[in-house]
Length: 345
Image (tube, rainbow, N blue to C red; front, side, top):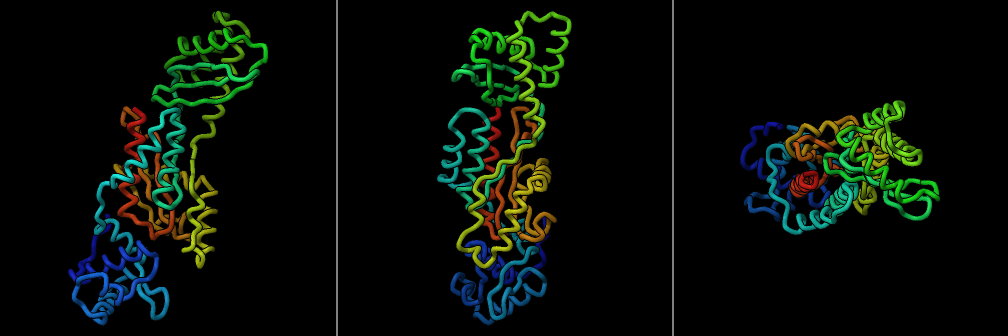
């Protein structure tokens, strides 16, 4: 946490008003605005003197001659760590998150819904990281769909449910699908996908498997499909990137383009989110504090979510300009992470 410099109560009040007004409007804040917004009983001239002092110690900056002041990156960090009042998300925000995430179905749907909820509530881009993991099988089933297709359903020991559509021979009987799913659940339960593939290979080599050739092929292809999918983890889901382009960005398109390029280069974002996995709650990255955002001047608020064993299984958050409404968005991100953790139990 950043230490708050020794400021007079007057300077603290002026600084807080500048930051809160800037985060709300995105515009520089002048002395007359402060005198109207507050009950400081200070003249605009006195307020200007205080703002000049805050500028000299690096907490405020004047972007244009004769303009108001905006908080510097150091000022934002001091405000976020030492002065910001964070409360629980309001009832409407909680209801919106729970409605999005409470629809049931595969955990993949809940993860995508989390990013959409955060994007909508924050007017930023919602992001979620599903780290590389090696799921252990609890149950596996093949459900017939249209002719020549089946739905492969994998249930992990962490409660996750993932579905994939696979191609099957058009003449494959439903009994082969049932046999394959029953075998995997009974004989391969508790194993990782790699372990399951090795176990199956040993049984086939020793001719101990009672499976017919059709079921053997189905299981082998199912395991290969999931193994290949796992090899491409971690998965980064981004929703609402279009929110980063609004009327307020018309004069700052270069920064927005740079931010979109940074989101597109997902590997760097993944590394940033992975660094938030050890946080007890939301972690805030502001501007050039992280080399990734040295050019775009963006901020990320991210929080880890856990499974029933308390193990971190991912990170959820938002990315946007540094003038985020931190006091509102931090509890929203924390609540989303807590809701996802409950779904993992």
